[in-house]
Amino acid sequence: MMTSANITRLVEKLSKMRGAALKLGQFMSIQDSHLLPKDVEEVFRRVHDSAHYMPNWQMERVMADSLGTSWASNFSSFDPVPFAAASLGQVHSAVLTANASPTRKDEKVAVKIQFPDIAKSIESDLGYLKLLLNAGRILPKGLFLDKTLEVMKSELADECDYKREASCGRFFASEEGIGSDGRFRVPWVWDGSTDRVLVMQHMGGVSVGGNVVDTLSQDSRDQIASMIIELCMKELFQLRMMQTDPNWSNFLWNERTRQIELIDFGATRSYSKEFIDKWMHQLQAAVAKDREECIHWSLELGYLTGAESKSMLDAHVQSLTLLASPFRAQSESERRYAFGRGTEWTHITAEIRSLIPVMLSDRLTPPPRETYSLNRKLSGAFLLASRLGAQVDCYGIWEKTVQNYRFDQQA
Image 1 (cartoon, helix red, strand yellow):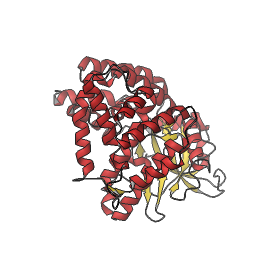
Image 2 (cartoon, helix red, strand yellow):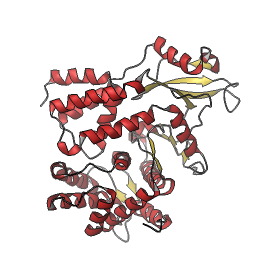
Image 3 (cartoon, rainbow, N blue to C red):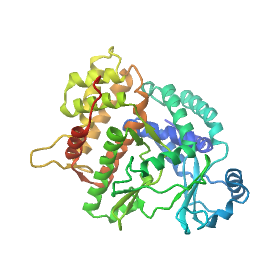
Image 4 (tube, one colour):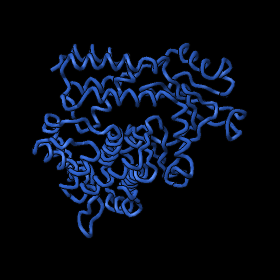
């Protein structure tokens, strides 16, 4: 166990490599449920809460390097004090001038500014994290740290490219994405954005996971959870492109328009048709509680090698079927699934946690690369539904998804 002094020193060190440390904390805490020892979770929680901002001179230098020395002329106002800190940068409120705005009128915008040189420091920061975590021997071997860090390196590199994020945001805003679905709203992106400065339309909603939850009606809670779970299914099985960061602050609820506003697309991942076909087969097997099919498609996907012990297979299949529980109809008359305290879902998550020690000790191979981000988002969606205490027709969402899905002939 870490002492209080050791935890404080570790937080100070990790806070200086905020991007890599926060990413690892996110990977470890959401990839499965509660994998980390409590003292290690405390470290990552404190790193997350210890917001570090650039001094004004440094922020202005990044803006000048990215947008030119006359960058301020694009804005009729610009708040030098950031209103939010992200793992890779900070976010400022501003008003884009009518001349610069795509609407040809002054527009409120959010300006995301990347910390200087953070992209260059990813590899060294991850190397230091690996050394730190291995030296402390505080992570179970079944987490496959090397593979986790390899995936993290790739994802962080993508997330450092704000031009890529802008492109993903434009896709989701288009008719090809979710632009025709009036339940969601995606901000426009200013064409003057660069790989280090991203300017997007300001959204008026509030975080779905914040204190606003306490003021929402049950109907609003149910609607929010239903929309986000349905969005996950559409992203996976229709678009094959998913915004995988489950951070609640990325989803804003606008009570006036009753829309969910989506504001962060840095963690967007795309998936091949072959992979999604196999993943659909596995999820169908889990919903049907078909043990042999669960094992077959887990082998096809690379979750299993074929040499696992019976205890590992039992734990793996049981965890799959438990996670798929919301997609099964409870009865002919009751299809809505209840999340939150005191519900079946609470007992299911506890049962899944009880299986984790077996899977960590007996797992022979790391999870498929694609599933690190995918599982993180789906787990986050169910976690949000629990936070909201929502009741969702997950069975209806699943039935509609299956009916509309088309496999390749080879699948």
